[in-house]
Image (tube, rainbow, N blue to C red):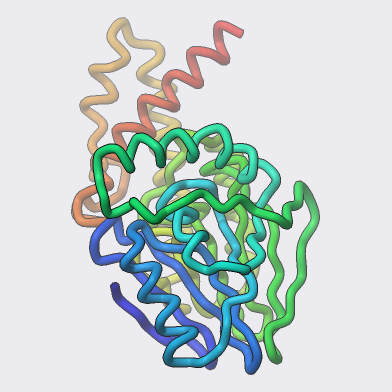
Length: 279
């Protein structure tokens, strides 16, 4: 697990095992908030050891920015912490994560002690505000990658823990391209110092403008590809021709995982387009 202090009492963690998924922590004098957990128990436990063992403060809150296993399955390793999430995150964790964890446990003993801990504080609109020491946090909805996506803005530091609303390649398989475009455009107006992506490296102040342009350009590119493909006799052939590079993204991002994510984006967008026309 990689770890970095990105501001006073603000930390970033990144998995070295699974998809460069990230987590964060904001530490106060008496307690801390964890933003997401990591994919494997050993990495999440390393976060807990750092906060509670080295920094000597308990974790009072966990914020889940999306229901996905690599962001939520570590909730159970912070006993007593209050889990905050979107109301849809609560619903999706019940509908999807409980069954998925049971299947994974049957195949991998690494997850033997993992259990699903559901959010106990949820919201559907507006914002939730928290104060940790002298830092003020605003939690708000950022739909597009998934309807349950939320982000956390550290007001004083202008750091955004964006979750999967901002990634090295936008991902819309469970979401909506237009919604994600609006979300990214809203991030552009926040005057940020750092963006903490749900996966991938920290985006620094001087990189933010270009990263936003690149993600918006990618979404526009795949939208154009699918609009063209749907007019062809064989739409899938057009999709196969549209490589991740031709849509403006490097194939090496996320250790090469972007090629698969790009393929899924195109297939999902085509299916959404076909469904819309049939509807």
